[in-house]
Amino acid sequence: MSKTIVVTGTATGMGRAIVKKFAAEGWNVVATVRKEADLTVHDELERVRTLLLDVDDEQAAGSFAQTAVEQFGQVDVLVNNAGFYQMGPVEVSSMDQIHRQFQTNVFGLIALSRAFLPIFRAQRSGTIINISSLTAEQGYPYSAVYAASKAAVAALSEGMSLEVAAFGIAVKAVLPGQHSTRIFTKIDIAQDVPADYQAGIDAFFSKNAPTGSDPSITADVVYRAAVDGDNTKVRYYSAPDSAAIPRAKQILGTDGYWAEFRNAVLAKPSPLFTALIPAPGEQPIDWQIS
Ligand SMILES: NC(=O)c1ccc[n+]([C@@H]2O[C@H](COP(=O)([O-])OP(=O)(O)OC[C@H]3O[C@@H](n4cnc5c(N)ncnc54)[C@H](OP(=O)(O)O)[C@@H]3O)[C@@H](O)[C@H]2O)c1
Image (cartoon, rainbow, N blue to C red; front, side, top):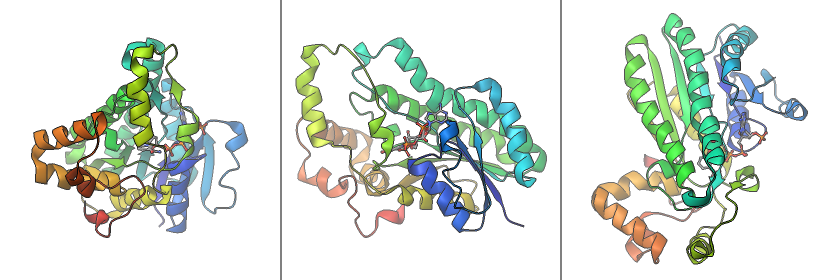
């Protein structure tokens, strides 16, 4: 019998690529979008049912989980992918913006996971795959709130994986590097940024343009996380700029890595750092190792 996966936030980007990958591998897919106009985005794919869900709506999570199960009779994997990017110095990101960032990237994800856990616990199987980010490993400036939300997702995944291991449930976090998606066209930007910050912002973004890997790279890693049968592994690094981090930390040590990263942001990357951490989109031969 085909397995069934639920994926949130699938109108564009990685969510859409994940739907495509699992459908191509013969899975049933319950894909969610939040706009009625996007309900037809997967129409060309067989065995994909597209449902409306705004993950900010915590009250909707329970009934959505039941509806998702009814589509194909069982759910085997939940991918919490929906998310967005809040940008700007913490000092001038409004508390409303900061709450919204955590509402979607963290609280919505927790609410949906809580809705599926009783179902997975009853069936003694199930995998939750949370889309975190390489920013969970190192806080970027002017994206510190976003990074904090993704670090929360990674830590949550580790803690939850230990809580539910005895029930045959796996919880994993995929940490993608930078990808070329529409997330960068929908940024929630802080307003009224004091001029004091401008030089730092200009310097940072001149070195960190929003380009990156193809979303299919992360779709392949999510697929691996879903089928590898390893319920002990939590962190999956996806794309070269993220996959290189664990190895760089191993070589440099945690403090040494931070010193290099800090220098790369505030001054310029050392030749060592550039050799260890590829630019987004670059693909060294052995990036798949971690
Ligand atoms: N792109 C990167 O470099 C990168 C790197 C690391 C991690 N990530 C993470 O990867 C995930 C996918 O992002 P992406 O890059 O593929 O961007 P994307 O193309 O903008 O996709 C994000 C999806 O999430 C949906 N979404 C946002 N808020 C939602 C909500 N409240 N309820 C339901 N759906 C919601 C969006 O819906 P709409 O189309 O309606 O806006 C969109 O379909 C996100 O969690 C992101 O933080 C991205």
